[in-house]
Image 1 (tube, rainbow, N blue to C red):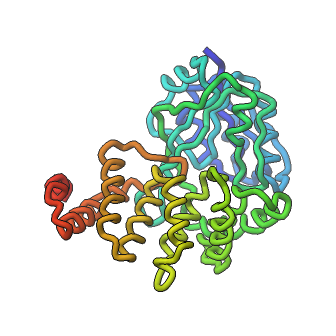
Image 2 (cartoon, rainbow, N blue to C red):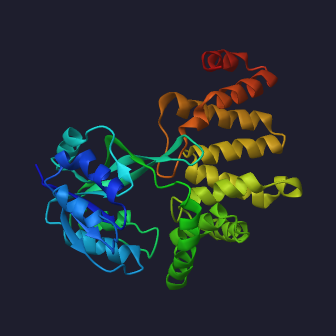
Image 3 (tube, one colour):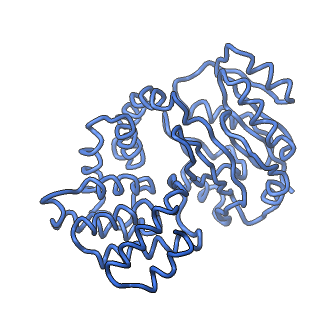
Length: 347
């Protein structure tokens, strides 16, 4: 069985850091904390919880800081959390089983993002992986270790999913301020990597989240460029296509360009619930109820099996009572009463 480090980068988040460490320290062999300039009791609390603490000045670059954190890890595996994340259920057994898996380079774990208005969204992230000095975060902000990097370092191993989930409560009242603060970093990142579809999409999403009118033009530009590609340049492009499909109205509803966007969105992201919802609603606005129903049946399958892409945030409430009411209503209008019968237990 491989050894495991819990690795956390933090600043001025003492109490939530304590919660994060305590939620999983029994699952790991060491806790490594990188503090980036705390003025509160963060460092003292980390040491009290048995962590090894390293301190640096904040470099104004998330990847630079996180890569310094990874340099401090001495174990075979890394379990990485942020200070505002924690496991509700003890992950020890599962983490140890994962660290004994000879075939995997890493494991996706579901994060549940608590929303300011209530409820949560889920996203599946690689947060437990086989440690290597060659694996580096990329990006000034919205940093990530590309899947291609894992594949290059561990060519004979695969990505797997762990039957685990953890909470994240960082999307509180200050979330929009955090996005506004990060937008200049995203713009700087894009200046340095102008061809990166990932960073273009993250900037467009940031613009959308704070209500910046530059969001939709940037998304349309990205989608137009993506039409020339055979494969999706980045999974986050699903967010871009979702927003575009939701925005189409009036004379644009039945243009060839809209048809292209719709077909490409479903071809690349037909297992992403938000994309299918947006596509179904678009077909309704176009007066295509039969096609809208076909897409709603795809969503019914997702709701029934729980099998769909969680690489982008998904709110489980999407499959709640309003969905079944909507499916029931459209099926009834089209006299598909066998579908209405399936909806009854959910109404």
